Image 1 (cartoon, one colour):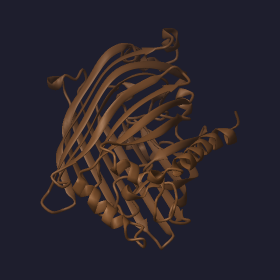
Image 2: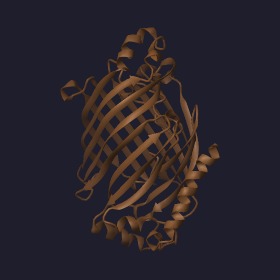
Image 3: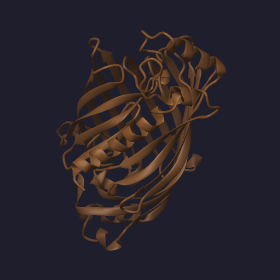
Image 4: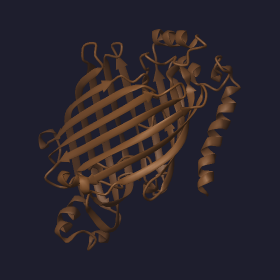
Length: 399
């Protein structure tokens, strides 16, 4: 199948489904007569939005899956959104309103026989002063492993990782500010093995042969706990158009809490959203991750460049940084198009970071406002990286 067909097929499915739903009054927005899922989500006890997962990442040979979003909203919250939506001149109905709590369930299967299933919950309590995010699942994932930072293999090694994962964050608002602070926890119990043990022989740098062979052929648990500090002034939780979000996570992975390897992990993410005019706006992302460890970490726990157009876990290292710039043009009330570019670096030695190779990606996409009451958008991005061109179905913001 050509790239064009791969892109067009999910779009046609989405639009045809939208047309079918639009025949029902509950899926028609009285404001403009277009397809909209807001009423369906709010007038059901558990508003459900199915989201197809079409995986095109070459790291797993593509794949398919389904994600279900369940929106939980009180009668008071529904009334606030409905009142905002009744103003026909107001295209910001969801802005400045408390986002609804959301639960998600998902399952995916890929072309290289990987699969992943799980669920999660994003909850807002005490009028948004308390935020909780938790997720868990089980996966059997096959990924080509290319090396750590500047240590590259003569040929990729296919690593099989069977793992159970739990991740949680609990954040409390500090006074009346936009700052949130609280504990965070991560736990992964994994069995790691190469698809072919002979791939390890003679394929690793001689000085790392024994250490990496032991690492890539073992059962290992990483268990960490720490703190998260967040500043969030975005105008919408799902698809922001203005505001800032800064988040700092610091976790200790230690034997005393069940970890087989001791290290510290620092993650800093900065997201910026700015309106330039009535039709134009821009977004900018900066992210830096650093794993302070005296030994190699298992591939799943090693920071990696995460950008559109870059295969999953393709470039890893104990020090990773990346930035992306996006420009968005709003065509009309429902539709907008975007163009973006990004650059990332990964290395094992922080002192050598400036001299490490840069990985560049760029692309374009579009979004459709599928649930006006929640400011929720869906669409497609097409990105070209150093090796591949990939498209993504996006639910909400790409970041």
